[in-house]
Length: 337
Image 1 (tube, rainbow, N blue to C red):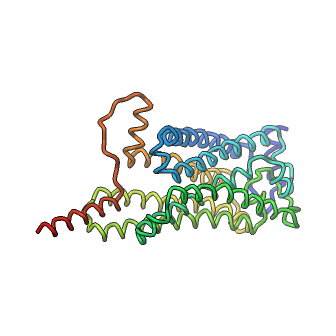
Image 2 (image 1 turned 45 degrees about the vertical axis):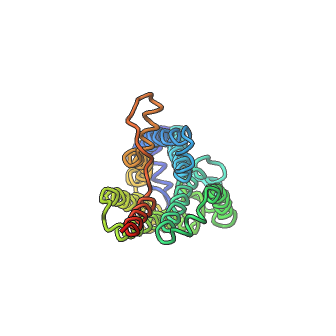
Image 3 (image 1 turned 90 degrees about the horizontal axis):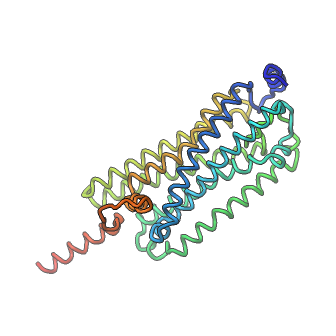
């Protein structure tokens, strides 16, 4: 089938609630996803390697390690998505109609798309819970958030993955699974029911909104407790706060595009879909840069693996440790007086 025939077939089979594409735009989409996925895989593997090669980092940042593993899955999903759609396009079957049920159960990328976005969101919510607990209830946090508790949270991530895939599969068993779509993009919105797709994109955006406001609470509470004594640390929290806000935008854009397509509100070409849906792929790259910028221990481990000698730094103290030490000093001075 020639490129002209593919373009004509895609236009002819286009339906509401589906994608509007042509050969060139879809090919661009596939190349973009594979490129972003490859870069993100390198970034995720770098931070994962640093965590795994240091016992202290593994224990201290166990939830961040799991988050990076989930982001690695997200990066792999981009490669699977690009190669899968690219194969459909180049073999001339992209425009062949397919049911929603067949998309979910016969294609290998819809499942990874679901897990690659939901699992990082779950990890983000757990980290947000930990931040709020540490600031609002320090005593409860110290007693409750033990290492074993963190392991339990980590174990809940794959459990959520299994449950959400079961829900996605169940959503296409009935009438929703019989719906025929005009192209074989097999995105989440054309591989699951309308209610599940709506839940999916609403959930992942809401998770980062929670992360944003939890970071805001940490920043405001810390500013009140320390009276801005540790200004540099406030700057770091402010930077993370800004990045959390950016993450909302990066994830909200593809959510809006996908849901407006699924609810037959408007139509988008593959260029718009490719650019907006590629945005979350950069989160792994950005998070890697932030990790290197604000964590001396991670940089030290990186230099250690490269065999580069660095000046030894004392382990970084958390803001709660510094606050406690400061209070103890004031108490000691008061007693001596």
